[in-house]
Length: 116
Image (cartoon, rainbow, N blue to C red):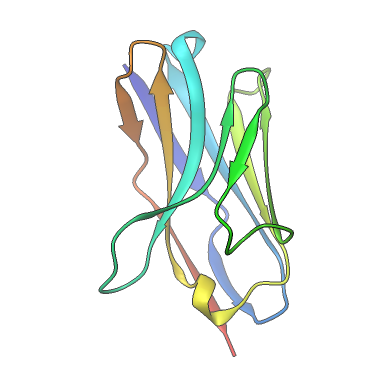
């Protein structure tokens, strides 16, 4: 079992920055991949960025060059640094953890609102 708790969301003006954190607890040694996803009202949940155990990263085209994902293994935490935020980045952001077995877990989500 893995528990994921996100934090760092909030209201920011367009062009601003936020850093999201996702703290993992439980069987964290079995985590292979961590990622951030988001879901805007009326839309499907979409991938934002992922990072694997060997620090390989992947980003959605819409956030490349603006967002950066990183992980601190000592703290069992994954971060999403979001710069140059746009109103279309407004969504609930979810943390996802995938075990080596393929089982995945989700956090409860944190709201990010970007005003124009």
